[in-house]
Length: 135
Image 1 (cartoon, rainbow, N blue to C red):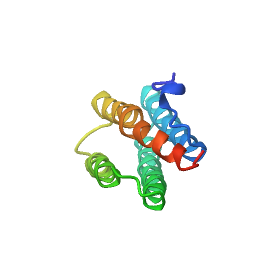
Image 2 (spheres, rainbow, N blue to C red):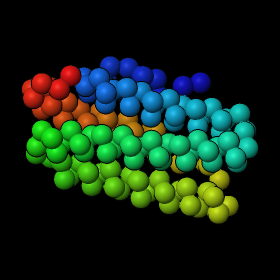
Image 3 (spheres, rainbow, N blue to C red):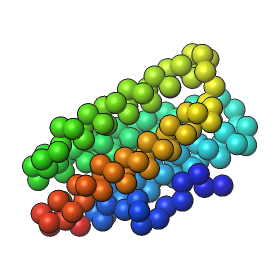
């Protein structure tokens, strides 16, 4: 079951970024499926690790575009990325230490943060970068 179905409201109309967003959405959907199927900690933990690693890669891609095209809200946007990574790593650390299980609350955080970030902050840079010729 897809927790987050991909639709045009998640598109920033930049091919490379949209591909990465689709992958992040797919990873959250896979994590949700693994959790719902009661898969073991190793499977769930590996998906969480991959998700955090790929988020770092994705954020670096966005921030490279921001630097290259002098996006005016780059600093504030990067701070959002930093806060997400910090929170996700805190979840990961506590999960790996057995302090918490992967709960509906954590899944809600991951899915809502991603959707709100894409539909809010990310959608703001799409037109700016499109106007600079980025497609």
